[in-house]
Length: 140
Image (tube, rainbow, N blue to C red; front, side):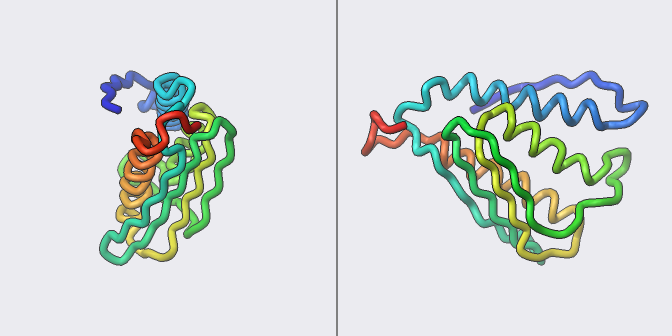
């Protein structure tokens, strides 16, 4: 899926609503794009090593929402971005995409690498789950 998003938010106040709304919109777009989900793999997972961090993301695009994060507490800031907003984004994204999303950060120390590994692994897991299953074109 390719998408271009242009965000105009209230980041002068804080990033919370902008990040939350982006997760909601992206989830809705993916849910709509998948339609009846016929012929996709549905399940996807990826374990991503990034320097000292190891992260696994698993998804089920079956139409039910569940979100679970296991790993170090995400706190602090990256510029104006509150690190805890990554979990807010992921929860709203999963909720509106109507998917199960499990994120496990097995270990890691660098906060930037932790966040980056989560989003890169999510992209790879989604690619796997959304790919066409040519061996089972009628599967759901």
